[in-house]
Amino acid sequence: MGRGRVELKRIENKINRQVTFAKRRNGLLKKAYELSVLCDAEVGLIIFSSRGRLFEFCSNPSMFKTLERYQKCSYSASEAAAPLKDTEKNYQEYLKLKSRVEHLQRSQRNLLGEDLEPLNMTELVNLENQVEVSLTRIRSSKTQIMLDQIFDLKRKVQNQQDTNRVLKKKLHQVGSEDLLQLSWQHGQASGSNTQNEPKQKPNGFFQTSACDTPMEIGYEQVCADQMTSGGNTNPINGYGPGWM
Image 1 (cartoon, rainbow, N blue to C red):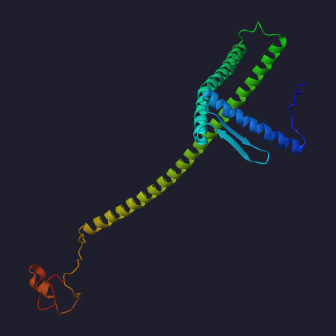
Image 2: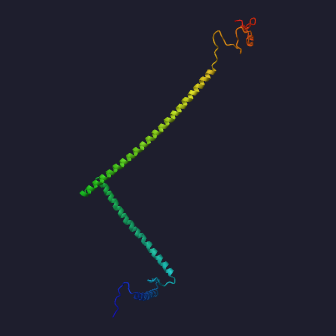
Image 3: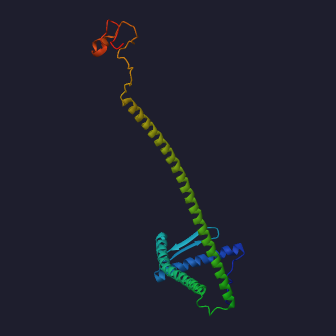
C-alpha cells in the first residue's frame, strides 16, 4: 500500500512537529546540494526553526557574495519595473484629468446656454440652480470689492483732510510770524527816519541860546561865545547884547 497524501497544515503535536522538521530539513538541504552539483547552479538556502536556530547551505564558499548577487539582481528587476509602474500611473492620472477637463468644458458650455439638447429636465433644473448660485456669488464678490474700494477712498479722503488741516495750521503760523516781522521792520525803519530828520529851528523871535549857561535879563555876565561871535551881539556898556 502507498502512503496517503499528507494534509498541509500545522502539526499540533509538538514532538511530531519537531521530528517532521528535522526530516524535511535534512531532505531540503540534500536536494539543494544535489541541485548545485548536478546543474552547476549557485544555491543558497537559509532556514530558521521555530526556536530561532539557523540552518543554511550555500554552494558558494561565501554566503555573503551570494546574497550580494541576489540583492543586485532583485534591485535591478525592481528598478526596471518601476518605470513601467510610473508610466501606467501617469497614464491613469492623465485619463482622470482629461475626463475632468471635458466635464468642466461641457459645464461651461451649458452655463453659456450651449449644448442644452442632450440635457433632461432634472439636469436643466440643476443647471439653473448652479447659474443662480454663481450669480449670487458674483454679486457678493462684486459688492465686497466695491465696499473695499469705498473704504479705501474714505481713508484716503480722511488722510488728505488731516494733511490739509496741518498745512493750514502751519501756513497760519508762518503768516503770523511774517506779519510780526514786517511790523518790527517797519517800526525800525520809522525810528531810523525820525532820527535822521534834521532838527528844525524854531521860527519866531525867541531862539535857543548857544551857550550852556542860561542868560537872565540884567545879568552882567555874557557867555564867551556870544562875546566873540560878532554881529550885533557885542555888549553895550557891559549890560548884554545891543538888542536888549
